[in-house]
View 1 (cartoon, rainbow, N blue to C red):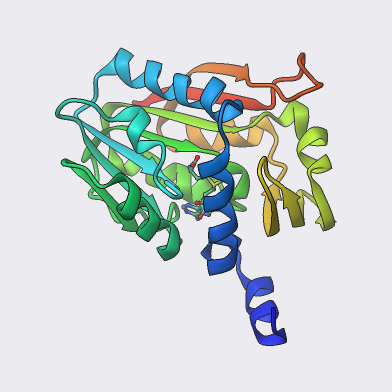
View 2: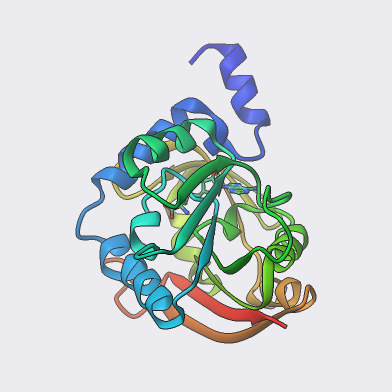
Length: 237
Ligand SMILES: C[S@@+](CC[C@H](N)C(=O)[O-])C[C@H]1O[C@@H](n2cnc3c(N)ncnc32)[C@H](O)[C@@H]1O
């Protein structure tokens, strides 16, 4: 990597917007088989959408698009919003289907009309965000009254395990910034914010959202008794 590219990467608030890092993420997700995503995350998404039978479902931070196949069936319309153009392009390449749109956009200013979705979810995005107030406000804005939400994020009780995946990393208050080992390959830069559960909850409930469930789940060898994710569900008042 030349100096110019390295400087540009270090300035990015969301490293996934760097092309090389987006490709590292694509390689990891697409080669992760029979692990925590297949065993824990996708079944949770499938059960949740089957229970509520939405009409329009929004995926905030949709990455390379894989979650679309785990939430959309029948006539459901799926909208994926993702800031990295490389990941959006990959999503279109692999997962284009009827009633499905992948678009470049950001959780801080969703390109979605107010009250236009009846279900919204976000998987492993919340811990990448510094400010949780604006995305929570945006989530609330796009949901119709009574619309459901689901957020899967890092379980604050296991931040020590998440921290141990980072190397060559700096830590400043709640921010970890450095290289990280994701299941299949390392990523050259990633940012993680150690928000407390109370902070996450307060931003959701302070923005017109009601939390109805919190479930810790998913474990990594050898820490079988330490769920690394938390799934927060609820609805808009
Ligand atoms: C670990 S990946 C998860 C991708 C996808 N949700 C999945 O589970 O396959 C984190 C994603 O969060 C996205 N992200 C980071 N900051 C974001 C923001 N401000 N708004 C929306 N997405 C963001 C990244 O671009 C990246 O695609």
